Image (cartoon, rainbow, N blue to C red; front, top):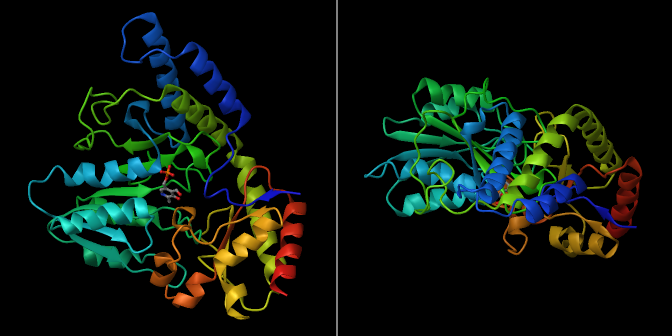
Length: 377
Ligand SMILES: Cc1ncc(COP(=O)(O)O)c(C=O)c1O
């Protein structure tokens, strides 16, 4: 029996997306910038995907810029704003950002920019008053992650965006873990820029999007042919974008049933694990991604407590989970996110994440709880 519980790292590409990608590879292989029929077939496929992705967040199609994924969308947001300025300015991020935001911010710092990192409480939440206090005359961008990938915490994005807007400062959110899992309505939400990734919503890896509110100006990171409204030069990856579009459309239509189903499964797993000695859920249990279970193990012997060891042992039992964020799994360092939330290094090294998805069943979770308890005994 094999059970995959790492849907925040990536999701299996859904058959409908694969079928659409296969058709795109076969019939829509033209260069979408070409004026002839081959090119226009590909261009039409991209425009359809743009509408599908736009509908997922209630955006106008022309505000969707296709990228290679969430990382590029995040980089385009941060650097695309920063490059508008000849002199270093000030940006605000949170202390629990994904590395796709934290690292570009560090680069800006090296280039003389000021970066404020908003602290979080023990549940990983930012206090909107701290944002208000951190704003300066030279603040040009605020970026706060919508749903935290390691601990599942949702931020008060509407409140944060409102504060930034009132101050006349652009607001970006990394919604890679939220898009397709919870409703997002950019017509109502005060955000200017928002990142999405295809492979988190059962589309292929290698596609993503940045929502850019009409009127917001960015300087592109790539110089070239001027594709994607001059914001992302390079011939578009038509099959990946087509698969992304199909995945976005299906995520939108399934959300109403998936949210309550996943929430119930998530809470079931938390309660199945509740009697494990020393197990402490991490993140906010109320403001939380519906598919996300995460915890630290705070007693027992050192070897068993290491999150990475636990991941390996569960893997041998056919269960795929993650120790903190997948992108960081190669590094033995404690998660900066948990440290920012006030956890000790030891606790942060004993962090485990189990993220649920389309194929997760109640029986899977019963089995995972049994296996985990056996390993810990
Ligand atoms: C919150 C968050 N932002 C950005 C990314 C990067 O997205 P991608 O893998 O599409 O580059 C991830 C991926 O784990 C993520 O969880």
